[in-house]
Image (cartoon, rainbow, N blue to C red; front, top):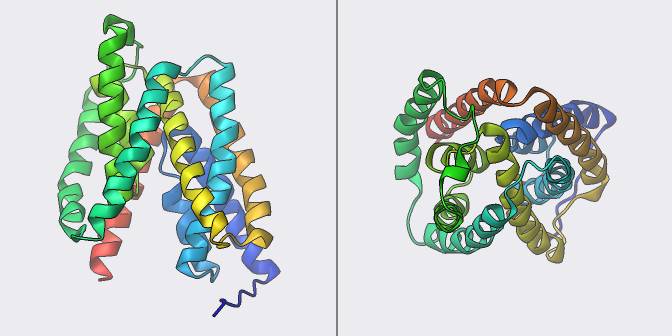
Length: 260
């Protein structure tokens, strides 16, 4: 039986600004889905339709922000490409695993991990400030990027929220990219995973285009503005938005646990 969706102009007026904001934040530090998905659900879309429509708008927005970072030469393409490929494999494994065991333990673990990550990010003034990735050989960067893609991809398939934010942290912390290039690399991975998921949703006919198309336009606008701001302002802009994304993620997890 097909779900009947009837949205009012007020629903559009409420949802679309949140999709713009989600695109803006996501293009800067990840975590946009923590804003956009609840907005779709609040509008009255069934969960599977909300997920599909969210993937449609976020994939469109990420495509444009990725293009901006690519033009500005703020992406290490070999590393980002290897991460994207392994992330798709990791996501598939994670999705299969969550069908077998509960992800509740990960929620409790993140209650500890997220505050620690936020504190480390604030304390380490040098984190993500300079791009020192060239000090690592390309082979090592490719290996670390592939491992990061596999692990974070597994997390994305197993649980999901904050995937881009965690990936930015891994690029900056382990591979010594600055936040700008780390963010650009992450967009390639996000785009690959979004397109893979969107393909499945499109084949299943789950995207609600009457809302998805204007939402995609808003998401594109947010991503374009956010990525342009990053190109102009650099690391000083990303770090506080990165911490904000962590706070949003922590709030989402606490809410999920309290509402169970």
